[in-house]
Image (cartoon, rainbow, N blue to C red; front, side, top):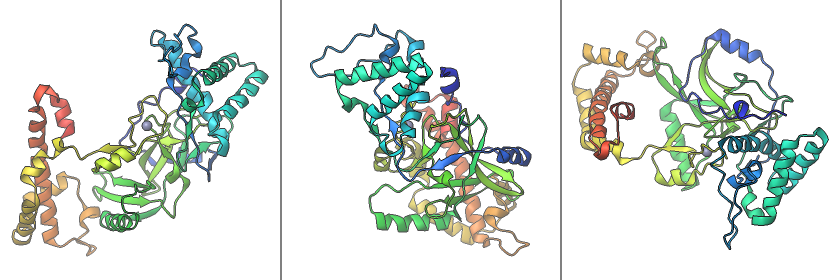
Length: 399
Ligand SMILES: [Zn+2]
């Protein structure tokens, strides 16, 4: 079995931004057969300490501490470490997923791997299994727990999936933003402080689309395809992109690298929270060496709110509403809305009689004007932070 780092450890260049594919590309990929199976039971992932990678470096010093601790990974042998990590991801984790409900028992997983390795003469796996079992004796099984993750999806297709394979459309109930946030408010009232389930995704209509930029929320909580049950990973093997297919926009999940049989399908949620509590509670169990620790990004940092706090607080926002009601929509406003990619999708269509009231269009233009000012001012604020924390490029992208 070939498990080189090259075929497994290349999940870092995943595009986070939604991209558009041509209709032809979408149709071609849609024809490819995939065989994936939704799981009723939580598919676990391995949280194996780095000491398990010591099997390729027999000269790694064993721990002599009175309380047994996993030995640090051998940093002097980067190739051996990479091979060990690759084995954990390409052989061990799929073996855990194949166990289904009993995947939490790593000893059982290792025994099944040992049997397979004996049958196929796979000496790498035989040595790795022996090394991990040896560490069991030294440090106890608590360091080799497999944590349950909730609902997920595992590739069961023999031979796995090639890179660039279309997996599935992400379908669900579609809501405009105002409706979506109404639902979220209602859900929060019922669930209280509990962290909500993430069975939803945001579809951004491309700004260069004829109808302009807009946002829709796709809720897969009760009516959905199994794409909504795919777990987050900080080093995912799939990506979700906005694609145009037979004249409509949809979200397609496709693999970004080769996926082995038994490997869990994952994508980067790219979800943002403004709550520190949510950030802390959203513990990521992706098991990747590149794990960020939380499956949410934090957007509540005060650094990014300096301009907002000074120039767009409650009273400023009331002024915007008053100005929108009193001032006529000028040509400059129309041009600004166009520049921000807002067209008939977000603002409605005069010809179809669905155009928003003019005060609301004016208000949208005023908000766009503020967004432009904020970008300039925030960039300057970030650059002015002590110790040169932001380069001009980082300040521009942060703003
Ligand atoms: Zn992670």
